[in-house]
Image 1 (cartoon, rainbow, N blue to C red):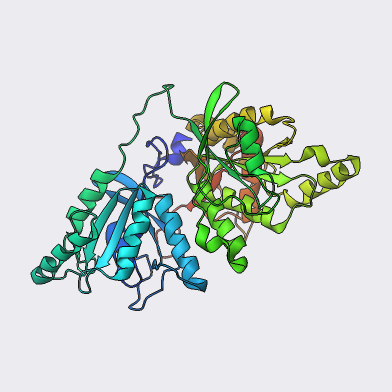
Image 2: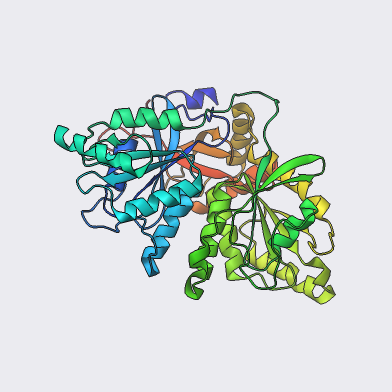
Length: 464
């Protein structure tokens, strides 16, 4: 394969950083220039910017790099206290971003000064116990920089006067952001590591709190037959099978979760926050009930977040022979897109088979961090594509020239080809890749990089 790869534009895409990259959340009230600052940090105009409040509604992550350090910057919508309807949802997204970030950049408009909304936001930020960097934006000249002094009154330390629009002061701000980020963990092959982070997620009243109590052997979470009882963070260290695991939940947003119309939405936010903070997710399904659309949404969140996955069918003590027949059919129909997920049948109430969770989690995490050597990968891929070449399209069939594993957690592969591949053929490669190398319990990502063409007719050799 070395001959095939010669001349290909193969970037350095190896994932050398251990563990997930740190996260920086950019928050503030509406129209203070958060998205403009995000564009400045990432060095390209990607976040949508408009001179009206409320353009950004969801949390939007972007890859960023400064002085050789990679991190994720999360753009958020405007935060306001006691917001209602859509504004409440936007504010909730911002609060989730704060809870899942390593560092928070709080943006204030220096031309307006500290407002009541800014002061309310400071109280929210203090409750998060996260490092906060105060940014005085729109300081487009020296006189406006002087106005930033008044922002000391917010009690967040020294204000950083910048102009996100013009770039004034942005380099110093980025230096301070890097200084506030947690130190990257040392690369120690086979060395000790902290507890693996597990998100325990599922639709309301599926038994998450009961399972947590059973695993921890004490009443750590409130259990009630009313759906949605859990609203506060419940991060618990639990010993299973001789190993300590950290079960991760996320912020509850108690005030707003009581709004009947928004309960399911905020439950979805809590799920997303827990999954983002974890390495592997245990998705709890009620084995005695039909797999619902809400169950599907939770599973989709885990897969799209790229986390390892274990599906636990809870309340197995309530499943009779007839239900098992129907459940098998439901699994074939509803879970056919994730046949690789590890499944266990448990009962949080009786303790049935909960001891199978730890081995299932380990298998998923091993797959999530599995790396295939370039030689073994391409030897297998050559045999596969020769035995089953891509279908002919327009008189030609694209060929896979070379493949490399770009990273782990989750495993990511890049295929260098002579042209685009059909989605069906890509799924075929993924299925065969799993058959050959495993990856049980982990999503994998396949991307295609067609060879660059030169010449007036679009034909030519690949070039670097």
